[in-house]
Image (tube, rainbow, N blue to C red; front, side, top):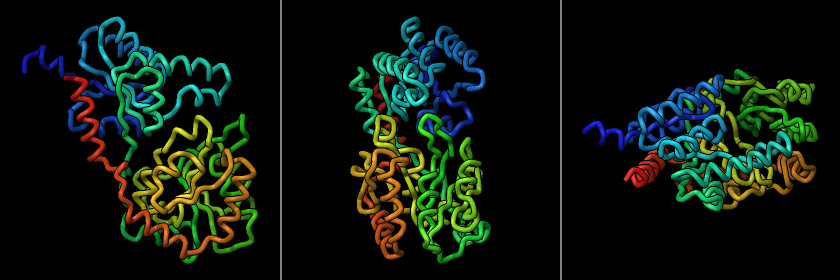
Length: 362
């Protein structure tokens, strides 16, 4: 292949969360059949990384940048590279940018909304983590789009359920409702991710239901304080575990929680955890977001309420856990095992991503 021909096919990818972040791993895996060239974006040195992208665009003129995430330190250089050097880019979007930044402040939301529109309008294409995000991007002017919803990172090891429960001190007969994720404190809302599960358990007298929340973050210590005397009895908060061990902890669950707000932040999401819950064949407790209707093949419980911190949601969650039976769990588990959807198959997403990028390069 001639130098000019090689340059016309050159594909550079990076993640604004950082090269070693799970999102960096995600974009490299999605593009693996196309042999992309990773750019080592460093989130701790955003300005240096942004300038590096511009230098690469000016000096080598790759055919296409593919950016995972929507951080401005990545998006602004790509828009400049498109304008100054004619280098096109694809952006992979996991959140509605304006509403997400609006959680910090109204001004951040306004700035984020303008940036989101410009990023979509000037791109060559969008890859959304959900079809809803693709539709949002198309409405903002993206010329084409596709969906890549994510996939599970591994499978549970043999005997994981018994081993994890024994390590944590959870009786084999106890029905465990759990979640994994970043246990962050949202100060503006006074909400800690997963706190609705702890509050529901504290309302119940039922001894054979427990909550297992796996993850770390700014809200973990407050969550432990909230659990009080039930910590280590009906509420288990082991903190962060290595990514390779997450499937083992999921094996200790009976039901997974996927609480999301129904606003412009939560309604557009699947979240990375959904693919892992489904791979573990866990029935899911969800909010009344679009995914809870679109993906449900008989394995979801949909709870009312605008957000997991709303009284209506907490009341419904408490009532569900008060009457939840092993038979109900088994029925929904069989439904998820028999599901027809293939949204979370890695090979299928690689195939579609390959077709999408090849069409752009052609």
